[in-house]
Image 1 (cartoon, rainbow, N blue to C red):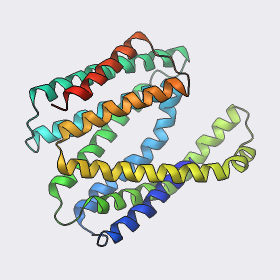
Image 2 (cartoon, rainbow, N blue to C red; image 1 turned 30 degrees about the horizontal axis):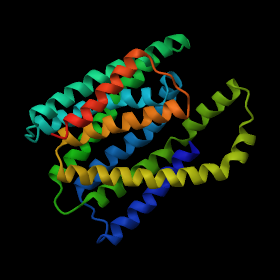
Image 3 (cartoon, helix red, strand yellow; image 1 turned 90 degrees about the vertical axis):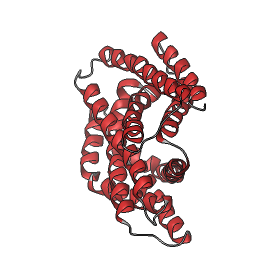
Image 4 (cartoon, helix red, strand yellow; image 1 turned 45 degrees about the horizontal axis):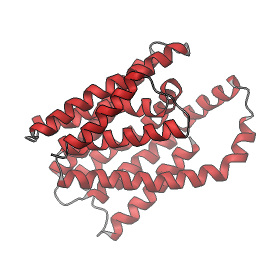
Amino acid sequence: FTVGSVNYASAMFIAIIWAFVDGGLIFEWQAIIFGIVQGIVYQTMWIALFSMLALGGLSISFTINRLAIAIPIAGGIFLWGETPSTFRIAGIILSFLALPLIGSDAQRGARRTSRSKLLMPFLTIYAVLALGFSGLAARAFVETRVSSNAGDVTAFLFIAATTCSIITWPFVRRLVSKESIRQRQNNRAVNTHTWHIALLVGAALGILNFIQAISLTNALLHFPSSFVFPFIASVALLVLSAIDYIVWKQRFGRLTIIGLILSAITVILINF
């Protein structure tokens, strides 16, 4: 969680500099409100993500979260009149067929490890709603902005995320302490040994987070939600699954493999 705080602080620093270099930070209500909404989601999901990782693994957790793309896709179609092609609609449908297949492995994993049956569904519902409305906020900014741009909303996003990381720090410390006691770890020794690594990793993640956030907004400026969100979800799923398999030696069941194949087909179809 130290990594998370450094991550958002680094991204905030970069985003503010970017905004000023790009003509100055514009205090437009669209950038402020929609940036704050996304920033709050970033920090709360950072906390929730670790519990989901413990239950289902990296690709499983991110796959469940990608169900959230339904909300901004629906917003693009019903609120802003997007008309996706037949191929793109087929790709969207395939993406939604793929995600529950992969999520079913996570539920079996939760039962095998005797975790609370309420925890994973609760985290899943929260992740879907929070991330969904975060995506909708990004699209709403693009549709309602006047003079502000991607750099402005990204700056307010990470200002909010950094502030939330500070506010939630006592709660996070209690969670970490309880986990350390449960696993009989020396938390002081671990923190001393990994402090410099946490700073470096947090700074690196901050750079990547800034690139991801500003790229999403810029993509929505040029492409419809029905293309951007399924494409990001499917590509991220395939990349994370490869990392999960190679680095963390996660092994997938038959349903997960089918889901990954459907996700690959989704990437192809939504480009037509």
